[in-house]
Every structure is written in structure tokens, then in C-alpha cells.
Length: 330
Image (cartoon, rainbow, N blue to C red; front, side):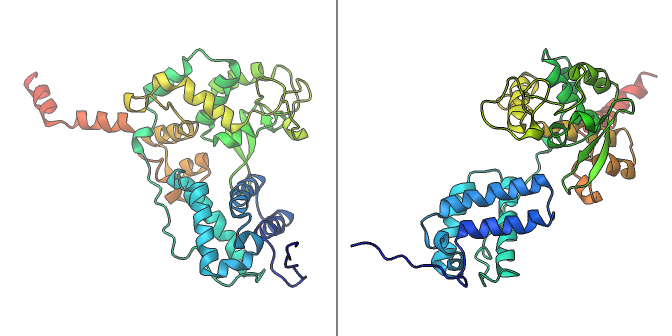
């Protein structure tokens, strides 16, 4: 005897997966998000939809108003993101809560807040991971290819995010003025400026290319790639952040402090290093905000503080014993 399935009427609430797609469409169609934000929201919510498939919540998003539905959501979230870093869990939780809020109003599919009792992960900042000036200098001496050398220079000299640099097309560059247009986290198009190091490398990297992504993968793609991510000259695709991060982390392991030797550096540390060194050099807050393109001083605070070298130099310079030795030698 066959199973009897409940048919959804036009007034019924959707499945979790359908609710996700409706939420995403409502915001991307209205240009409410930048392309990068849309990708991250989709990644989080589609992972949860897959985890919830076959559950009461997966079949009907309104089940989130029940204790069993809330428990299923918590279990799916923990299974999907419980092992990730605290900062990553914060992002996933914020994404989920944005969707839940939209499903309550204006969609009207749920009434409760199933994540109300969840504890927000505390994202800590590891100050010891700030690159020293010696480490940055050693980085430029590494024997690496022209692409990677140029890629590492740009986030450092511009203090831009690595994702912004990897998204650059040749047409975004103004080589004569040492600047480029980037799309920031908020979707704004802004200028970033580089120095002589990158200025000497970029023309060699482009080798006459006038279109396509600036940074390309090592070989032609084996699967379909969006046209905007393909170089019309070489046929190679835009270098992905994942691959760029892997290369950088592996290449910088010998430069890391002993405690970090197993993991090397991250691309984000290049931006952090430049802003920290600018602060040590006495750059004023207004200029640091312009360089970092942060919206507030509070966002800038974690960068605009002296690094370990500067603190060590200060401690040594103010050591009472050092002052006594100086006086006794006169």
C-alpha cells in the first residue's frame, strides 16, 4: 500500500530549502547585498537545508515554532558549524538569524525565535599573530613565483582585504596612479593605493593583458567557470581565495615563530601588518580609517596598536637598569 503525502496548498508554509531560496532571492533581486555577501549567505543556509532534509523542519519551515523543530535546527547547526572557529560561527549564526527574522516578518511563516537561547560565540583576537617588520622583510625574500609575489605585495601595501585583491580585473587597475578600484565588504566601490614594490611587479604579471582577472590559477579549469572569472587570453580562471591561502600558509611556515611554525601565516595578516606599522609610525586616526576603509574607529582599534617589536623596544628603552648603565658611562 502506497504512502499518503500531505500536499502543500498555496497558503501552506514552504519547506526549509524553499524558504532559503525565497529569502535569498528577495535580497539579491533588490540588490540589498553585495555579491560576496550573497555567496556567504547562500553557503550557510544551503548547508543547513541539507542537514535538515527529511526532518520536520526540512519538510515545513513552520515546524521551527515547535520544541522538536527548534531542537532539530540546533542539532543541524552544531553538526554543520560546531567545529569551526568562533568568528566563523558568529558569522553563520548572524546569517541564520537574519533569515529567521525575515521568515517572521515580512514572510509570516514562523512566529518564534528558535535561536533565542543560543549563546553567541566569543571571537577572541590573537595579538601574537601580528607580523613583525622582520617577518615582512623576510617574506619578500622568499623564492616564489611572480604571481604569488605580486599577490602578497598588494594586500600589504594597500592594506586591502585579500578577497578584494583577488577579485580585481585588469580594467580595475590604474597603473600610472598606483591605485585600483575594489568592491568593499559593504558593496561600495573604493580606491586602494599601492607603493613601489607592487608597482614594479604588476606590469610584469599582466604581460600586456588588457582584460580578465588579474590573478589567475596555474592551469585551465576542468569544470565550467563563470565568464567574468576567465581570462580571454590564457583561458585560465581567477585564482580562488582557498588556493591562494593554501599557497601562502605553506610558503610562510619557515618564517613563523616556533609556536606558529606548523600553520604559517594567513593572507589577512598582511593587511593587519600594514595597519599596525602605520600606527607605530604615528599615522593619524583619520588617515588610518581611510587606509583601512573601516566604518568606525572601534573597528580599527584592533589594528591601530603597537606590534610586539615596538612594545619590546619601548620596554627596553624604559628599563631602569639601562638608564643607570647609561649614566654610569658618562
